[in-house]
Amino acid sequence: MKTLGYLIARNCKIFYKDKGLFFSSLIAPLILMFLFVAFLGNVYRDSLLSVLPEGTQLEKKLIEGFAGGWLMSSLLAVCSVTIAFTANLVMVQDKVTGRANDFAVSPVHQSLLALSYYLATAIVTLMICFAAVAVGFIYLAAVGWYLSAADVFLVLLDVVLLVLFGTAFSSLVCRFLKSQGAITAVEAIVSASYGFLCGAYMPIASLAKGLGDALTLLPGTYGTALLHEHFMGGAIEAIGAGGIPAEYLGEIRRGFDCTLSFFGNAVPEWVCYLVLALSVAVLAGIYVLICSLLGRKRKK
Image 1 (cartoon, rainbow, N blue to C red):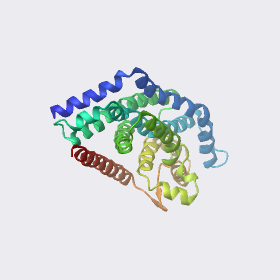
Image 2 (tube, one colour):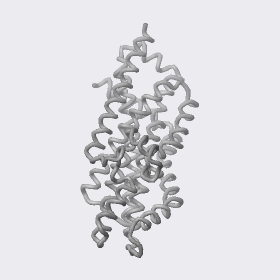
Image 3 (tube, rainbow, N blue to C red):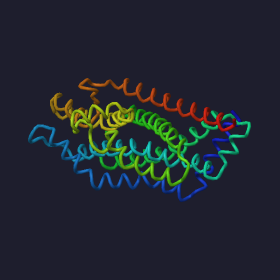
């Protein structure tokens, strides 16, 4: 455990030592938040009003709280994965500089080394994502706060699970990358596509049925749905308290992916957690196993 702690501290220190990399990772969620609010806010406000009965009047605060909940949940769903790729640059840099070869011939077991990269990346990503959560809470408090104490706790839990998933996914991919240019290219591809694939930029319910069903096979989709529900559930309940019929509330939940549908069947919240947790365990296990096997092969 002492060796693992030393390796984790060493990996985190290398990441934070690169001030440009650290601050760019920290600012990236804020830039994405600004773009969401500036260019997508009106889209989701209008989408909400289009679902409600004609002539329905809602308080501006309630509309802003609902739209803000969607924006913040989408932002965190994307950042939990994209920032993990940036944080995993330490592992790739060790290959470029030759440190990975030094570790390969050292007494440190390769599975322990792989675990240290994973945990260090998760810690770095969590710190940046929690900073984004704090900014998101401040924004919602300013425009329209409808989160309960339970919602806040569940949002934090969702972020932790999504970061662990993003770290496992990025670690598995980055294990096969051998240059900084390669990870930069992969990060660009993931940043451009992941938001669409997980339902962060556009609700899966608004896509063609075949495409929507295919996207529900991806584990990140379930983490995004959890964030949508916990960020927007309070606002939807407030809309219902204003006298809106239950069938319209159900349509809002389905239309904005608060209630995810798997081939026509509604997915319970506990199933979303189960899918996400199993995905973390499987991806992380495969990553550690591959690192261990490749490490043995290199020693031979």
